[in-house]
Image 1 (cartoon, helix red, strand yellow):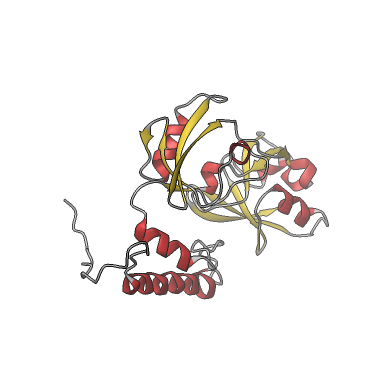
Image 2: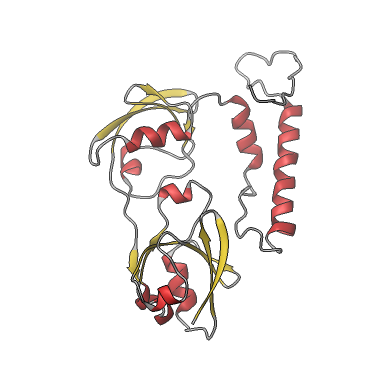
Length: 241
């Protein structure tokens, strides 16, 4: 077994009945770690261009830490898109999925792996915990709808590439941007070094969340077009000619 470091939790008086039993020293420690990660990312890693995204997500560390100290099973729903099948079925941000079609869900990977084995348009039964109550919802499994376009419509220097918003699988890795789904051989995009599978995450120094941002930033036809792309988990910069 690999060497592991374990912090012992000291016993403390039980909380009064009906009140959450939090280890406040543990929460304070985790909050400080979270905020230090934010500081390092914002003040050191981003300015040095070692990363383009702030992965720690400032602004909700206290709530997440408090939830994390109590949550031992399940996958937390952090966002529900308006008018999506999940929204229509009644799923809400903050719900905790603990089972799918009767199979326990211990973490986020369990949930996505189980979904990946089911056919599109099938109904799945989710067992949720919401504000301490357990409920069961039936949700249709729909194919992900992603905006897409041809590179030539965005900028002539990207002609020959087919682009789309990043998929949910990519976003789960903490990344946003524009996926390059295809690059025609010999095209201008190919000559500029763009490859199928690249994820465009920034134009110059400006991070992008998706196609709408990329289109907006290239609408004025800048003389220099530098794209930051994630390729094989590494960040590269391409000067588009």
